[in-house]
Length: 99
Image (cartoon, rainbow, N blue to C red; front, side, top):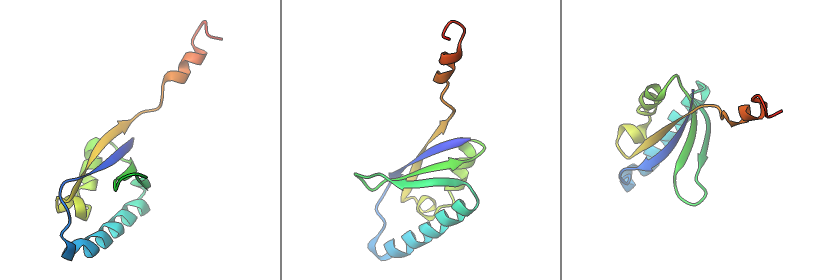
């Protein structure tokens, strides 16, 4: 299942930990990309917000997996998870009477 994950900051990372935490976060993200869990990752153009496209069995698996990220584990950030399904509207083009 495709799941869109929208980052939401909870608290600021202390300056003394910032560089280390962000490097550890990047490493953890890379590992999830290598496993095929994170399929795409972006930053919002106008604000510091990560947007991830995940491939997981369900929202619970996505939440558990993201819980291993250092910024989530240390309560600096969290994610809103949006489960996605294929768009059904195109089927209207092929419904009886629409041909």
